[in-house]
Length: 180
Image (tube, rainbow, N blue to C red; front, side, top):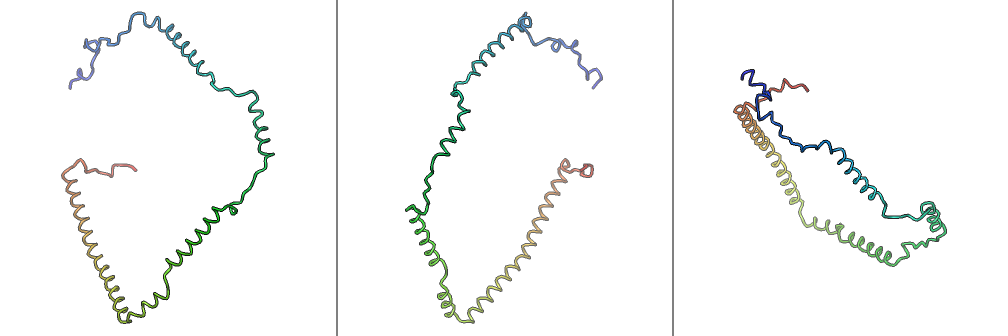
């Protein structure tokens, strides 16, 4: 581009030199008087808004503390203990029954548990424990194969990421130029 094309002069372009903002004749001459009129009407409105619609009796706040103190100091309070009320006694009895019943039904009966194991032979118990031990070892054997599967997934994802970076050069940043 030439040196002349970089700078545009208003005088050279008739469209740009035209003033697009029009103000009526005498606008600024009467502006001050109109502003004063508007501000006076706003001040009158604000004075009306400043009037309080509520009234406080005379010496109300001076007499308030004395009035409160007279009502609270001289009055006797009636104390009713909560344990003397019927609903409290009934609720406490019901809660106690629920607690005892839950202990009875929810705690295992030790005699029945001991009796149930006497019916099973020692060989059967040993077989069961050995089978459980072997099944737990099989679970841990599967973890090695799981590690290999996860390694393959990670390698595959890294390859896909490398392919995307190689095809889209705008994503390939050189981070050594950044100061941290």
